[in-house]
Image 1 (cartoon, rainbow, N blue to C red):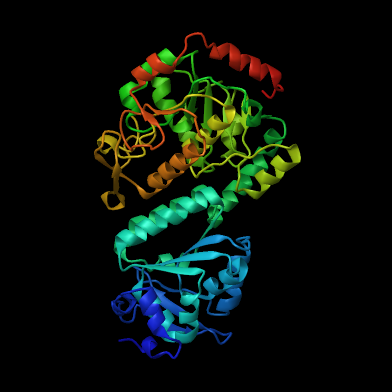
Image 2 (image 1 turned 180 degrees about the horizontal axis):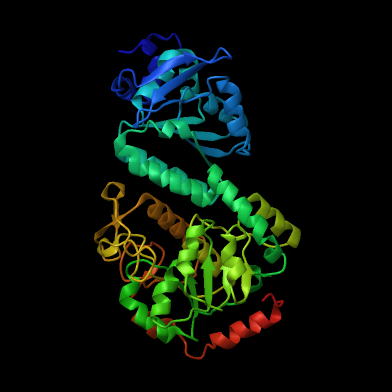
Amino acid sequence: MSIWLNSANNPDRLLKLYPGIDRFIMSGTEGEVTVEEARSGKLTLKAKDKTGRCFYLHSPSDPVKEAERLIARQGLQQGQKVALVGLGLGYHLAEILSQVGSDGQVIVFEPNASVLKAFLVLLPDEGIDLLLAPQVKLVTGLDLGEFVCELRLVLEHISTKGGKLIVHSPSLRLWPEEFEPIKQVIQEWKVKTGTSETGEMLMAENYKKNLPYITKDLPVNHFFGRLSGVPLVIISAGPSLDKNIGDLKKLKGKAVIMAVGTALGPLYKAGIKPDLIIVTDPSPVVMKQIKGILLDVPLIYLPTVFSDVVATHQGTRLVAFQTGYEESERCARELGLETVKTGGSVATTALDIAIRTGAEPIIFVGQDLAYTGNKTHASNTVYDRQRITPDNMLFIDGIRGEKVSTSISWLIFLKWIERRIAEEKGRIFVNATEGGALIRGTITMPLAEVIEKYIDSRVNVVELLQNLFGEGKDNK
């Protein structure tokens, strides 16, 4: 039994709500965290990371003001759903609750038993009050599988319904070793969605540099509703692209070929020139995808994409203003344009744009979302030799009824794609990837059969696109 169980604030309710929490907190390592009094009189925690370096989980000066500053930067709204990674002594949780109100929801992820024990021992009444708040759900490290499942669900919600991920960075330094792969996923997610300080700064810098182009480039909205009934192929860079890349040549001029940046290497090597390319990554690493590939085909980009991508592109540029980035939304409003849903990846962004064009069927190629053949990507990509981390694997249904291995982030993107497809009643979506994850809502079919069944040689895509670009302004 722990001291906190003697609290007068009804700990039995907490035990009932979270069975096994008492056993979990008692599994904490003695002395892993120590308590100190901050200069403001509030308590803070001191700990050592794996390198032996000491650090504070909260300010040694004023933990409450620190939490207020952290949450003030998040722009939270009443009724919003928040994923809070890292509990500490709960100062930032209390501030989040004050911002989202009684209609909000906060999922707290804390896998370190020592931290949770300190929270409940040092603040027995306030701590139990916070965890018993109807808006709060606590996910501990008691069950790794449950932890992964809850994190997947909440990140999936954030990517589609405007929730918020808030990471208490000092807490990550105390995560148990078995949670290390999950920590990596969270850090990657933060950068990709701009929810880390580095990611936010990078996106802001890119937006500023891209602004001269954004204001004169053709909006991708010019295509919305203009490709009705025209087949469109979204080419991603999954391992299965190696299997049917040759068949893509048969689609040239008969279907709109939209390629993500990572797929340009394989396509270039195979002598295939897409009709559209789409690049969305805000980080400089994206330049490796297009290095040595001087394509003059139209480029679709987000205003926050790495600025050199836009500045060096030799062809027509189409800007897609994204939902979820304030400056992009503001600019779209001023121009009277719809924003696009990004879903957290370039392929999900491509799908949302493809749907809005009215194209049909929409065909996926290279959209494995799984480690097909123990590979992460197709040959001739910048990632084709990337190492697979077995600890980060989950197993899901494959297109042939088998189980295939995937990552948490890919699973989130898969669920986003399935939900986006489900919104389009009566539309035809075909998965011609020939490997990887089952995408519910699509017709699974080899690319050769797709060509035979859905591709009409009477469709002149080249002429169609030329006419559409001719209607837009010259932005080269």
